[in-house]
Length: 293
Image (cartoon, rainbow, N blue to C red; front, top):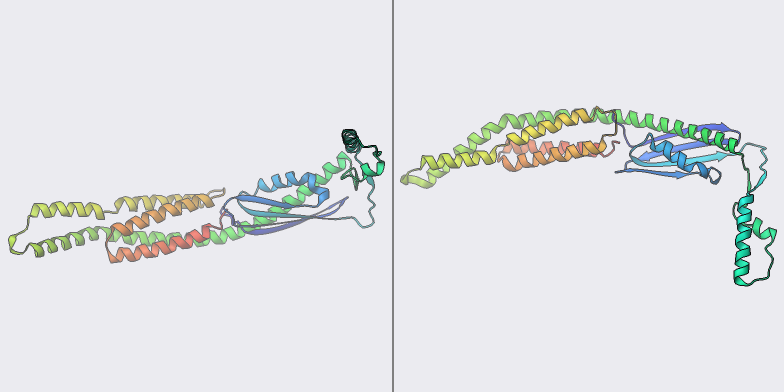
């Protein structure tokens, strides 16, 4: 099923540490890029949040916003990172010795260092529970965003199917008219040669040879066959249960290549008119495909 790359999702979770609010939005992008904005207290879980999002959303610029609202009346207790404090003490003592200083390494100096003392510390079990609750909220937001992308994808699918039918109708008109192009071109060539030759006569063998060369140059059978093959691949691709945006973009490039060749080989006003319409439809499809995951 086709999915749009544009969407928004939100989910919340109530935890002992407070309420978690997760919002995710995504927009078009050639690749998959994930940006996470998360409170400092939840930063240890940032990588898991990123993995959770990447597991479901494969393409687009995806922004994840996580908020944490504390429980009313909750008291945060200071937590000592003793291992870090000892590391700072050892580092300061080495600096003191290396620089030949005599000032003491005080407790206030060590306590002032980043993360030696922190508020709201949790034991390992509480941290694991908080991570599960956070990822559950992230998963809920992703599901809501994905549902929106599916709804938009259904609208895109309807438009693509309609425009694909237009392509079939136009290329069928080209195929129907193609044999007559060779006949008309051969007739014009013979009339021109006879007009130029006048009373001197015409070498019928040479004319036949030139007509054969011209017919080969005007023949668009191969282009029509390849165009039909690309259309069938297009039909198969839009039904795949996986991200198909890049593959559709490639097929559109190939379809456009065949149309350009048809336009350059078939020197005919009716076919030229169809070629112009085909290119217009392909461009409209390409614009829609830019929004497909």
